[in-house]
Length: 166
Image (cartoon, rainbow, N blue to C red; front, side, top):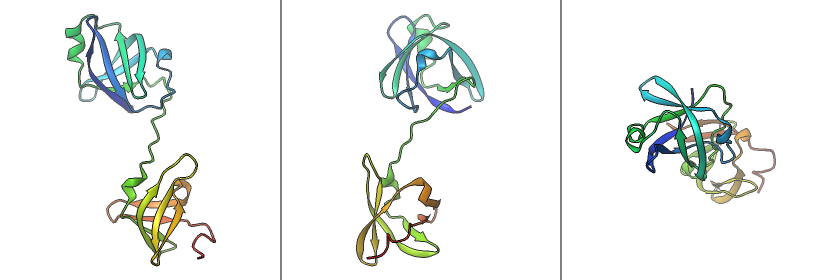
């Protein structure tokens, strides 16, 4: 099972809980019948949903059928939550390319240069790379990144022909 979030605490006086999640914003929680709560390590218990509403892109308030008071809801605070295996979930896709600053890009075992900055936008995300003393932009697409070695801080990329011609 894939962890989708965490219960942040009790909400209100009738046993509602609030939770944060890492799912895409268009997730239709109102079609779910239960949340799996990890009460103890490796112990996943289904709690059936009475009502649920999204209050932010990554936060919901939920009333579970089995929880009737604020005190009962508090017991679930901090517990990890999982989607029922019946659901096909999609986690948020977070580029956060800035984590690659300082990485060295290689192509066909040739050192291209260091990622000195990133440009993230609606159309094409790019790496700003120091290539032979000049700043160039390279597309930061998953399809072009062959391997990423976090220990050595290197990225082996397939760079389309012509991008390095200055």
